[in-house]
View 1 (tube, rainbow, N blue to C red):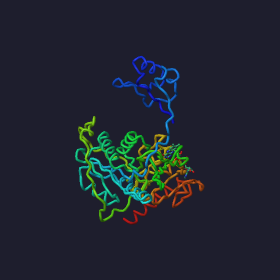
View 2 (cartoon, helix red, strand yellow; view 1 turned 120 degrees about the horizontal axis):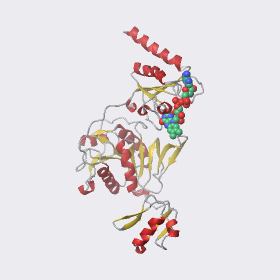
View 3 (cartoon, rainbow, N blue to C red; view 1 turned 180 degrees about the vertical axis):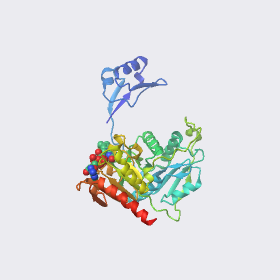
View 4 (tube, rainbow, N blue to C red; view 1 turned 90 degrees about the vertical axis):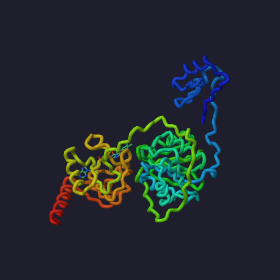
Length: 401
Ligand SMILES: Cc1cc2nc3c(=O)[nH]c(=O)nc-3n(C[C@H](O)[C@H](O)[C@H](O)COP(=O)(O)OP(=O)(O)OC[C@H]3O[C@@H](n4cnc5c(N)ncnc54)[C@H](O)[C@@H]3O)c2cc1C
């Protein structure tokens, strides 16, 4: 790995101007009279070859900084909360953290920032956290990226956790990259599986190249290790009747908690489509020949008190709301029952629903991939099967009434 080094003793206004004129990427910036190289640098070396002699050099940097992994202990879960309410992804991650920690003999920590609520910290102890670190004396409950990052950084500096698992929520997706940048460590987004090696390297597994391969990513030379995981990928552990573990209050200088964002007012979001919370989902795929035929699938969903959803081609065609897309680039769901109608079962679609408790697939091709994950296969024409199901549900209800 190469690194561009600026020899500041040779830098003056004229040299700065020359370097800036040479660089095709605009990578040289001056702040408070100090010349630095920004992320736009492509290490092309043009400034070294054509710039003032000796002003900048490219040096070989060891790609394997020696870190003592034994100094980093504890699998930590970022506790995602809104006004004291814990997002369920937090419990799912605590369950996974317990499994990982058991392999390497580490404790499980939860990091709770800005809750201001003792009951919230206590609740985390019922789900397997050995210790909950709480920053709430000076931080309000509302998620603000700057103070939350400062508190997380303070926690990492003081506790040195081996890994930090973050839910793929709006807050988690803002926080995790900031922490990774601050500690110059890796971050794997949207992991679908996690394992750990005996040397404490976290194996972060996620689909890559459009879902055609599962990439196993490790952060071998840096700590802490960071990843985000979507809601409903892992199962939440059962709540233990007895809380075990302890709560540790953390102090941080209030001047580190400045925020350039001021919350003037919060307005609850309108209750929209929430596929992730649905118990029953009926999904339409490209086996549906035209937009008006979707009413058939929607009718079935309505009768079953189910959420209606679609595959990506239907979203791309503008037939279905993007919030109703299931799959790799849509929502991940794990309902009690899912019925797929005219869906082939691409890896990208299956990645978003394979955790469903019962899968019923309707397809007229007996070799369709969806049947590999389905618990019940209905082989036939959806234009006969779906109206038949609707008819049966209706007549069943009428005779029960
Ligand atoms: C990076 C990337 C991300 C992606 N993300 C997603 C994603 O999040 N979600 C997603 O869905 N896709 C996603 N895709 C697209 C994905 O690859 C597939 O193209 C898509 O899932 C196919 O949708 P489908 O099953 O509805 O259509 P098709 O693959 O066309 O399948 C239609 C099925 O309907 C059956 N059929 C046809 N007529 C009838 C009938 N009359 N009765 C019964 N069955 C019938 C056919 O046998 C066929 O199996 C992504 C692709 C990429 C590259």
